[in-house]
Image (cartoon, rainbow, N blue to C red; front, side, top):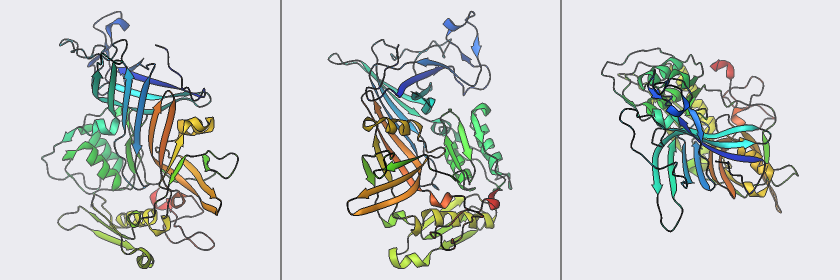
Length: 435
């Protein structure tokens, strides 16, 4: 089946693929489509499936990934695809009881969607697993199928871990614990990319949903864990959002090279502020507690608390640094912020280029500015923390969730403390403390 083209641009061409062969199964347990082997008994035991193109002539795709703020936990990424089923490729057939992995569409299949870009090449916007298949047969309309998909974090999160033993592995480093959780969840080593981290953790018993355990572990070290666009689980350590140099692009209406948006969201609410941060770990019998505050902002906005009491951070000094980070990335100096910007691929090829490459997983960074008749409303740099793509043959609309980039800039011997004049007053990270 030929790949359809966007009617709005020739710079990107969409693709939708379903994988044959189960990369999550350990050992030799998945069978290839027998038509692809000389021997019907041949089995597949690799880390990558065989990708089958199932892009249809008409379709809609909705992708949601990321989080709200730079210090928040990543949520499960999702994709919903509605496609034509003219050839019956998505008709659900019962599996052969003697060969349960024959060619068929079913929940659990690998799936990926992206674009082939004229200059950037193949770009995967979402990869994950089919969670539900919903065919629709309408005598007055075209047969369609809707695929509800989740990323690797959602897939591994389906596992419930039960460990009856007493808490153990005190002093275990974050990377080692993440690996132990993934081992218990039977997640294949080939589908892991875990950054090194030597921050020690309290002893725990691995009891709960795997996604929650992964989240608590990464939060306890200030890192991030998410389902990546290569189909795996990725952990990035605390300073992964540090940046320097020019932004990826400018979104605005000021200069001739600005990528023009269709809408800005810039709310100014007290709920966006955290000027009293309370953190506690789960040490028994008595947890360690730290508190950091910004009393200077209380007179302006009142006291807006932020609390985490489920951390496994072992050292009080590390807990203190995490509290400082929350205060500086969520404090009064970060508001008002541009919360989101909406873009429409039909407005120009430069928008298509930006939408093809933007991601919360690097993250992408943009200069955002708005000029009105009354003057310049805002002009600052932001990190992409979340995306929502709504894509069809005739349109590509995207909402980018944004957060302030300034706290993550590498400036000299930066650290989490008030910046000296003539700087802006935003605090900066000391990478030496985390290497």
